[in-house]
Image (tube, rainbow, N blue to C red; front, side):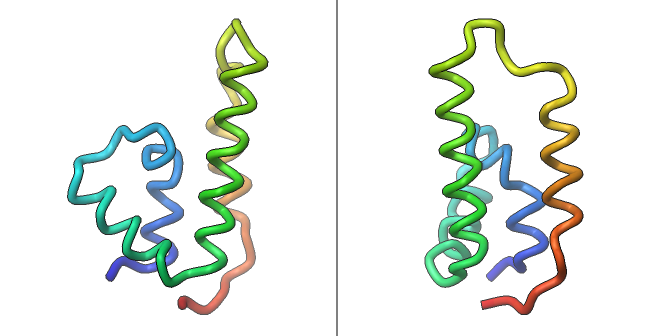
Length: 80
């Protein structure tokens, strides 16, 4: 099973479904047992949906960079 660090590193691509099926399956497996990462994925999905519904201009150019930076700055935690 992949680590939390690996799951979070691929989170946006996962939400966008821009990953190979094998990687999606690995993240799905991790999310099935890791409550913290599951919460992060749920948040990312909700944010993506909100941005899609409420923005006809697309995401500002720096949004992905800022969100990646935010996720990278999360306190270390033990894996599920």
